[in-house]
Image (cartoon, rainbow, N blue to C red):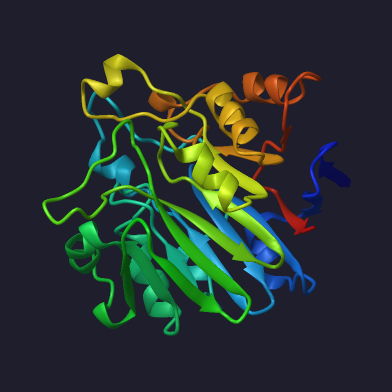
Length: 297
C-alpha cells in the first residue's frame, strides 16, 4: 500500500509505504538508500532504520511496570504485547530515551539491549544520567544531552535536542532538562519525536525552522485526576494536529495510546479523526504488525 503524503503549497512531502511484519520484519530488512524504515513498538516506542543506522526511541519492551504497580490504583498491565523482545534485537546502533519514566527508559529492556549490542550508544537526558547508570547502562556508551544540543550520529544522520513539557518544562539546579524531544535527520527525512509533551510556547516556531517532515506525537491527553496523582499527561489528538499545522509538518504519526487501560484514548476515535476530510495534515495511525518505509522529499 502506498500513500502520497504532501500538501498543496508545500515543497516538502513524504511518501509512506506500509510493509507487513512490524518491528521484527524491519530488523531483518534493509531499507533502500535515501529512505527510513519505521516501526511502532507501542506506547512512545519506535524503531527507525536506514542502511547505516538502526535506532530505537523510548523502547518499552518488558512488563516492569505491570509488576511494579500490581494491585495498585493504576495497574500497568499491557493491553498489547511488545512487538519484539529485547533479547531478539541485534544490530542496534543507537537508543534515544526522552526521559526517566520506565515506559521510556525501561530498566529491564535497556541493559539487555546494551549487552546484546556492544556497539550501541544510549542518548539520555543529562539530568537523568544517574538514573541511566543505576539501571546498568555502561557509562562508556552513554551520551548525556541537554536541550539545545546537536549531535552528528553518522555520515547521514544528525540529532537536535529540544525541551519537552510533560505538562511542564522541568529542569534541575544546573538548568538541565528532565524531559526532552528529538529531531532526527536521516534518510532524507526529518522526524520529530516529542517525548511526553504538551504544546508549549515557541515549540511550533522551532519545529518550523527545523523543517520537520514527520511528527511522532503522544495523543493520550491529560486529566486532572491523573495529574493530581503524579501521572502527567500529554497532547490531545487535536492539539497534536494543531501543532503540526502551525509548524508546517505534513505527516502526523500519533502514539502513546493502547497500552495501559487507565491512561489511553480510544483507537477507533483516533482513526475516525485521522480520516476526517477537513484534517489540515496527513495522519497515519500506526499498528504494530506492519512497518513503514518513508521516502523523503
